[in-house]
Image (cartoon, rainbow, N blue to C red):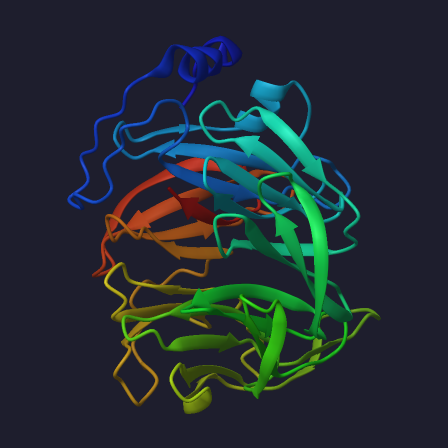
Length: 361
């Protein structure tokens, strides 16, 4: 979508307070606030060292996309490699990996209200209480930093495994996928949020990268497998191990199920895991496309739901649509594609460079 005088439009949205009325079927998600408070925030990484990472905003009521909202509102670029986005209260926490910072914005206006620095390799942010959040950090030995979400400061650090990536909360515990980063790892660290301490370490498959919590509070872990790259011509993957999906029993803290979802030699290493809005269906990308399975299945799916390979994969927790984010290289805008739960395409829209996921609010 093209809007004439975009800066003036954004200013009007933020300051005049356009009222959004929800058309969601979920009565618990009424969009009563103004500005950008409710909608979908698309995370566009941008190209390495190009300083062109961005956030796109999708208004699900009007089906309109607005790109580059941070740069337009604040008059400056967001930074180099926008890795992820988290929400705590009325604020958005935008993790900018290569710029080594978290940019904090007011969700209604999207104006910057603070910058958290002193972090070397930030990855993912998760709000864990009204006053604090957790941030994974590290390409080798990793940490989870404790973030004061009131004063926008880093207050403590918790040692975890190598290359911590995504993290999820179930009950009073946070589960951290230790991917190995530039090294190797095959563990999930379990942090007690009341103690800010690791209370358990669970071995899973090689290189866990993403996690979701299902309807029974159990945790599913996507393990992409270890990859060895050949850095000499003709380059490419030299060797790899199989990718897997691991189910952790929340009550016992043990591995309940391990499914092989990708074989050595398929040269595909899945990064993202998603779950349906009712917590009953798992979605993941593997060689061939997007697959789905019930949380009660004991075998990996064999048929493809959506025959597309995406750079990012999400499910709208309110309306249930599957979102796939299509990469067109690191020098061109990508696309957001929406599908029904049965895999039928709804629409597609142009977003920023290298979209890797979204946050729904």
